[in-house]
Image 1 (cartoon, helix red, strand yellow):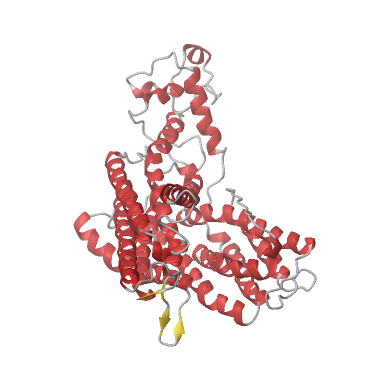
Image 2: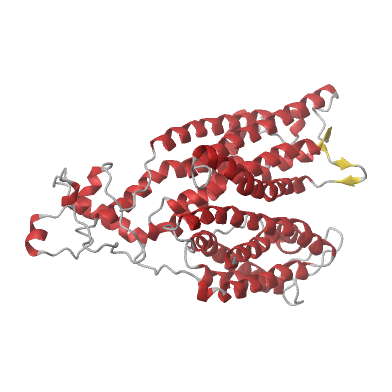
Length: 515
């Protein structure tokens, strides 16, 4: 409960920055600056980095409140340049938030799931529900920030718009600390990356030795538990036998009975940790294409919406606000999935969680293919109307209601329920016990890599389809004269191929085996 509330407050603050910052940049800070970006990434405990996060929000609130750090208001289209001190305070706050976010996101979900005992069947089922409600809380925070907080920022002031999420984040920290006596802790050990490197070095040093066919002759810690505190031993698997050489006991080691140097001799469990990471890699890689398609909601879907009729009665809907339907979809479907679909699926599959992690992610990938295909069909219809009305050469909205975009956003929300939460479950359950936060961070890494991939694909498509002078193509400035539908069909094709590759890899994936 403490972790879920913490994630709700943190994500409310995050999405407030996401929605509000564009206008704040434009109106207040970035009048005289271009092409500035930052990307901090870290993996540490959520407790320490939440304080960075909170301090960053406090700094942003100060930059939007105190006269000394608050840029002068714009007069019409004339905006005075911000002072160096104002730049410094503002970007210092952003860097603190980026640093804090990098530490919080991969750890909170893992830490929350650590509170459930895998040996207890009832708690295993509850752990599956935890991931559902954890993601539900994220989207509750996103919904509040996209509606209430943004309204306050636009109608009351920037300072209060940042101050409310800062206050809620402070309450979340207090709530998180208040549960400390009840938490189950896993003591930190050596760096997971160090252990991976030790296996590679040890296997390379013994490249000339043959791994025994009887895996019981490989080195393993004599204790019943793993050498790594809080971790369970792993059974040996027959794949990637070249890595088994790291656990081969050489004659000199056997003679001297010296098994203490992990850079020369690793346990079977340590070797299996690296094997697990390698087996997970193809599954992880398929998430990049999914994230690339998912990123269209904040980019080309908005561009598409701006060229549609945004009037609903006397109200004009901002094109960017349609993404709220993705959030609403998640908020609506998480309870439906957890309380209705899982019990029904459990009767047929006889699985505690209804679907396996791999099945759940596969369903999500299929839904994402459908959702981007729906976006392509909507764009085909929009372009057909533009052609009939003779608007191909006019950069004006087409009389097709923007509400036709709702299905594609809703379907993307459904895809998130299966794919994203499935990734949370998969990378937690299948990772080595001591590498859960690391693997959760790798899962989150697909989001940023997907965004980069989306930009790369867009650049290639624009370069290939445009004229020599850089005009025209599938995605010109005037979408009425382009073929954004072709681009969406291209993404649908890539998504389908990605899904086929995923099914191929998932069928051959070997589950983690605990000794």
